Structure formats: C-alpha cells, structure tokens
Length: 223
Image: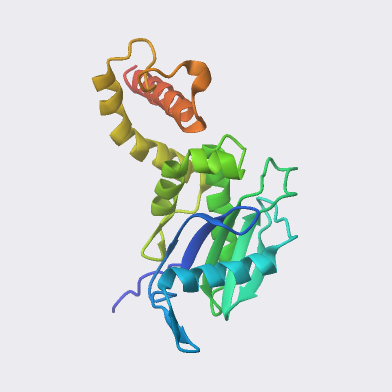
C-alpha cells in the first residue's frame, strides 16, 4: 500500500512591502507573473506586470493594519493575499512594513494566515521588534535569508517564527565569521573593522547575541 506524502502548503509569492506598497524584498514562484503581457500593442515586462499587481495589492490593503497574530485577507487578480503588519499596527511592536503571502484561490485562508503570521514573527525577531522600512532596508540580507528559510520554490519549509529567526542567524553567520577574523578585530567579535558597538545595525547586534548564545550552549553541553 502506497503512503501518500503529506499535503504541503504552497504559495505563489512572498512579498515584503513598505507603507506605500513598494517592494522591499520578495520572491515569485512557479508560473505566477513569470511572463510579460501584451496590451494595446505594448508588451509589458515581467517587472512591470509584477509592479502593477503590487499596486493593486496595495490599494486593497491600504488603511488596513493587521496584527502580528491576526492576519488580514484580500483578493487580487483571482489570488488570495494574506498579510500581517501595517502603519497602525504598533500595539504589538509593528511598523509600516507588511509581510504578504499570495496563494491560489483554492488555498485555505487559515493556512496562508498561519504562514504570514509565522514569517512576520520571525521578521520582528530579526529586526528587534522595529519592522519599519528603514530597519528592513538596513538589514535586507537577513530578510532575503528569512524568505529562503521559510519557503523553497513555493513550498513552505518552516512556519515557527523563533526557529526561522534562529536558522537565519546561523546561515548569516557562515559568511560573517571569516570576514571578522580577517579584519583582526580584537574584543569586538562579530563587528566589522572600524565599527564601534554604538554604530551596530540590528543584524550585527543579533550576530553578537547569537555567538554568545551558541557559546553558552557549547559550554552547557560540555558539562
């Protein structure tokens, strides 16, 4: 008897948009908006088609602030879009940035909401609770790593916010430690040369916290 694999949630796009609807980060999956469109004799590029979709998406979300633990739902171009965040979602430490998951109309809204809430929680952890445009732009590398840890080819890999944040920091560490050692910085582990502790970005501060956390785990395991 053949055992069927468990059903995995699948999305068409994951977007991180600012309060004006501009894409700060994101990925499109499968065939969704992979080709340009011909309209009135003019062929629009893929990026133009995606920008038009994002403008429609923003117009639907405008004025709606979704709490980190209560995603909101809109429908755009026959797709279901679920998002967390918004300009007035400050009671939960939010900001103007929205995390949006776009899925087929057949996908459960509850499932998409769970995905959006998990990624938004991870983003909030990584940004130190300040999910505003400036903070996200200052730490875009972490945001793209988060998307990759969360989803691969449209297939969701992990939804727990804490696990996602930890995985992102561990991956980010793989390319940071060699640079720090080459710089020969003594007493400022995790900081690039010429950067004082007071000038750290959230990503750099989190790397220091991660290194200390991992060091504590190693010490504990060795007891």
